[in-house]
Image (cartoon, rainbow, N blue to C red; front, side):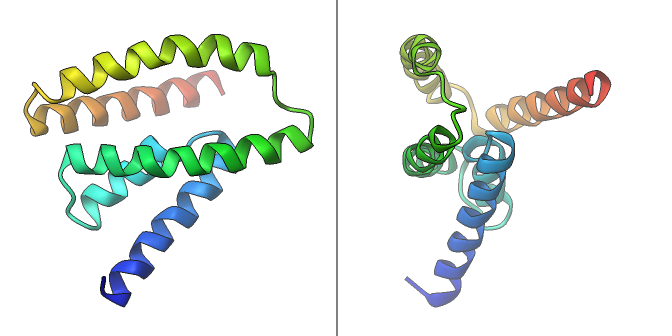
Amino acid sequence: MPRRRLLELGAIGLLAGLFSGLFGVGGGVVVVPLLILWLAYGEREATGTSLVAIVITALAAVIAQAAYGNVHVREGILVGVPAVGGVLLGTWLQQRVPGAVVRLLFAIFLAATAALLAVRG
């Protein structure tokens, strides 16, 4: 892999980690758009690649947040277990929807989330 590509992927990872530690987001909100816009990944490849990164990032984030007493394991499990079903359904759906539609829906989701946070903040 070319050095430039390694540096770009590292920069994306650094931003994702920063956002994950600061806001609790990173993979989907940072990695996916940057892989698509900066490195020309397809939507499906960006999503799959981001999910690998999320596993690593989430483990590190849980350890760091636990050190500050911010982790509620029971509630995390109650959210995480049903999320598995959502992941399976979402992945199945993503494979059947055109990439451009997935990209547009994701952009709408991010814009709506930003608007709600701005209004409620």
